[in-house]
Length: 394
Image 1 (cartoon, rainbow, N blue to C red):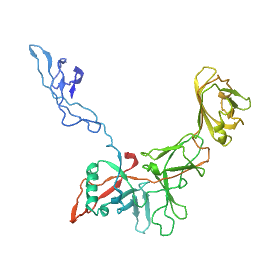
Image 2: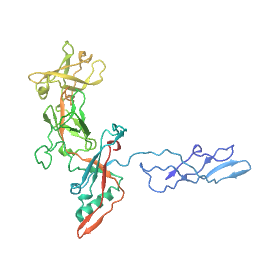
Image 3: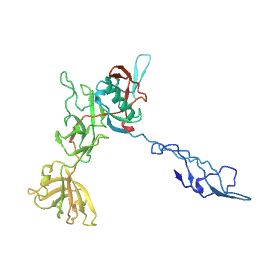
Image 4: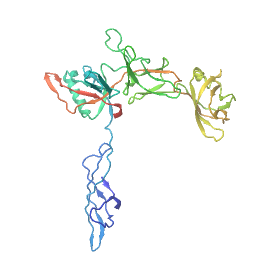
């Protein structure tokens, strides 16, 4: 790496006065190894060719050792890779749910308990899943690719990996996810993003614990609003956030107009017959419409606004919305290519539910992988621990 220096970059060590130093060449810094966002160099040794006019003595070559003081950029290593740990190995693993609770017991036997973690950490020992040479080789390959404890990955808990619970007698596995398994939110008319979560309850329902699901299997996710399954949504596989999309979005290619009805903000938007037929199922049900591309007749500034949809004319040529403020009383210039979309946010008090399967973000809890060959074609490892990675480290 070549660095150009100025006089401001160089501090002269020695008794004053210090005459100014004029750098006449570039300084070459020799860095030991690659330099990237995860490896910051804080000390640089360099040689500078310069001129320093000193009375009665002119030195044209000066060697400086410069300490380049720089605050390192601390950040987490590449959070979590999308790779999934081999399921045939994890199937026979031992899993543990670990909380951290301080318990103080006094002489009388009474105790005081303090919760240190709101969420537990999952721990697994996957050594019991390694039975064949193929599994042993797969484990070695995965361990080396993850570089021991460096990288995190997706791990499918063979016991708890679904939004459903095994309820049937002698159930071998939980039933497939349904869109009504877990409540993930309640509508307020504005929110349209919801975090996947799973609630664990006691039989009485008096105690529960909510677990945020941050690594879902996107292909397994299903969602519903008020008991009706919907398909207009996306899910982020890296965060578990479900984003609801507008079920209807219309772009009107011809001029439409807006006229206030003069009774408390009710306004009619008029187009041509059939323009608004797709909005009929949502009229008067608490859902709003997002109006974009309209121009304010006062200053011709494009405006977007959210307003409740109250009615759709029978032939689909007009809709009635309820505006708040003075926007509804302004005359509107005829507008083309305006967008009218159903608000993706569920109406107040609507229930949003989802079903899903999920992974646990984990890393190896060791940088050492001991393996042994027990018999012909049979390999094993005594103890291989995995530990869950907190979402804050993503």
